[in-house]
Image (cartoon, rainbow, N blue to C red; front, side, top):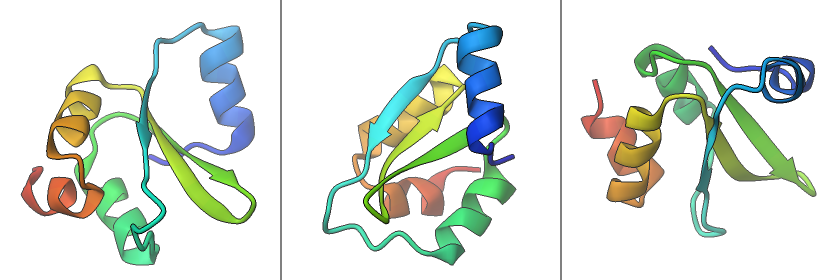
Length: 83
């Protein structure tokens, strides 16, 4: 479940839920297919942070998913292998 900005603010500021960041390199082509894969495969909510029209970070609310994404180091590889 992808969060909106308001949902993210509620999770972080009001509910004080711990979150984990995954930086997306400039070379990564973040597209709609990746969003569909994230929606299909992730068990916990996530938020997509944009900086100047480019996706710069994914914010995970699951430590397991965040650790796996960071171990892969590549979002596309993570999505292809995570189930």
